[in-house]
Amino acid sequence: MPTNDTRPPEPAPTPTPAPAPASATTPTPTPAGGLPADTPDAGPSAQASEPTPAGERPTPASAPKPSEPAAPSPGYRAVFAVREFRFVFVAHLFSLVGVVVSELALTVLVYDLTRSPLLSSLTFALGFLPYLVGGTLLAGLTDRLPPRRILVVCDLVCAACVAAMVVPATPVAVLLALRCAIAVVSPVFNGTRMATLADILGEGDLFVLGRSLLRIVSQSALLTGFAVGGVLLTAVPPRGALAVTATTFVLSALLLRFGTVRRPARAGKETRSGLSGTWAVLRDRRVRALMLMFWVPPLFAVVPEALAAPYADEIGVSTAALGLLMCALPVGTIAGELFAGSFLSAATRSRVVVPLAVVSVLPYLLYAPRPGLVLAALALFLAGATGAYTLGLDAWFVAAVPEDQRGRAMTLMTAGMMTVQGVGMAGAGIAAEFASVHTVVAGAGVLGTACVVAVVAELRATEVRDGADRHMTSR
Image (cartoon, rainbow, N blue to C red; front, side, top):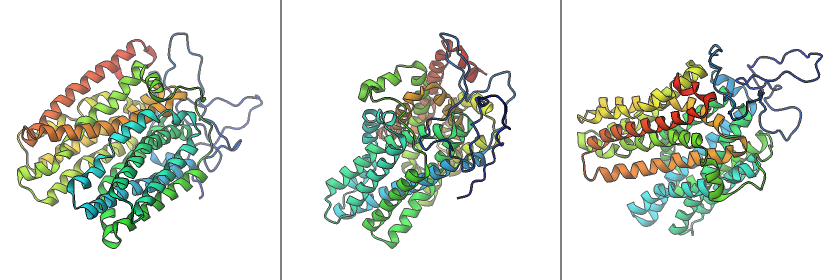
């Protein structure tokens, strides 16, 4: 695949024996093709750093210095100019297709075998608890093993589990156990891939845009994935659809194996594992605060989605209108991310993190007077658009986490996000048993805003002892 590398060429050689250091905010240019040319075992992306005075943290590479003019965003095309990222991106597409279609096909298969709505819905619910277990107990593997090996093995494990589901004699209990196994390895895969993006794209703006692209694709899967799966199930039986998804996981594994560079493990085998290693990451107050910034808004953001069907019934609209309510939030998220990634500089994205996070669920107050379809969809769209704060938050997070703990920290963060969404959906359902749906959604807006404000206060408190980072959230 030819490479359209849009980055500036390397400077002409100078008589000095050592090359000039790379900028802290611009990834080091690579030869055509985007892969390092010196060795097949490339380590993490190197970035220049200046000596740091004792007792202070270095200023994050992703945050421009106040005295420097804000550089324009390189845009998403610059990310695709990196050959290795293109392989990761296409592999992500195949994995998403595998996950979405396998979930839908397995749900239909379990219902066909049991005629039990409870067991059918359980196939979705089983994705949350194992996610937490895998993200907590297996997170240490992401730093102790070579990242490419982890990614390939996780994809092959998913392929094997789905292939086992295809066997006609597989009992329902085993089908659900295989679903749990996929959920256990998913946070390890996602955390490793997120940490690997920092190796591929550097810790600056390209990493932020690369993460944003993967999130946009994931949100798009919510809009199209189930539709594609539904069409597929009209042509083939559920087990046939599962066989197709097993192939997508294998394709993803092949792309990652042959399209990415082999890198060594970030940390030695003496690194603590299990819960002790998890606590080693969470001991850092700033890392804890940043994780809460990732976890708290989604906890409340999922409330109207979880109650979309009851609300559609409450206001007396059709199932087509229900589809509009389900689509409004992800459409807003995609629009917000695309705007922030395309038109805002890194400095601007950093400045808007706190304001956008604070108002992220405030639009749900529009549910208070029990609005009609249009106003409810508008509230969801606005709430989704505020998700653009995650681009700046990504930059803060990768700057705050030590490199030898990056895989574990990112696995914990992604596992926590999935878990809190499950908790939020369950909590919304319980609350709706005692109050009207529109009251529950509006209440989530009030309570969620209060919780985000508390997390922001904690985040600012971490800057008191970290003066080097204070400009990131106080401007």
